[in-house]
Amino acid sequence: MANSYGEILTARGGSYILNTVDAYTGEVYAIVTLEDTRFTTLETIDSNGIITNVIDDHFANPGADIKSGAIITPMDINKPFYNIQLSAGSVALIVK
Image 1 (cartoon, one colour):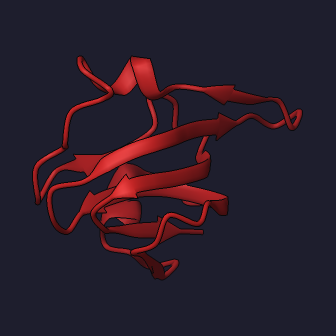
Image 2 (spheres, rainbow, N blue to C red):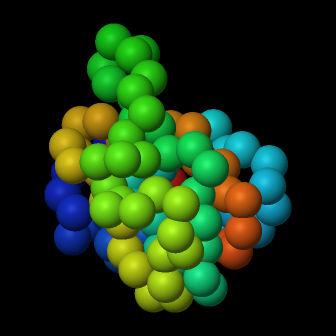
Image 3 (cartoon, rainbow, N blue to C red):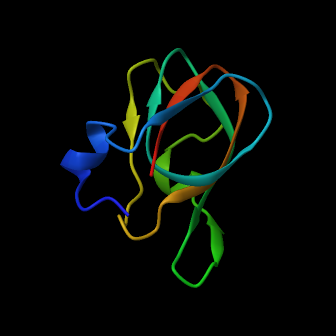
């Protein structure tokens, strides 16, 4: 696992472009919106494998588009995003 947000934001672990409505399941440590984007699902996973929906924790209005250039990180670095699905837009996922 990455040690700090500084290491995460340099994408040392690589990145993946999500530009479909298919869900991405895998550990994600940061999300960068590449265009106006709407999330359908945004979940985290903890060390015990418990998955929690956190979309309401990250967006004041989860149904609205998130503007291009937003950087979204988990509230807890030890609970990376895990299940991400878009209904519109595209994002760069910073992976482990």
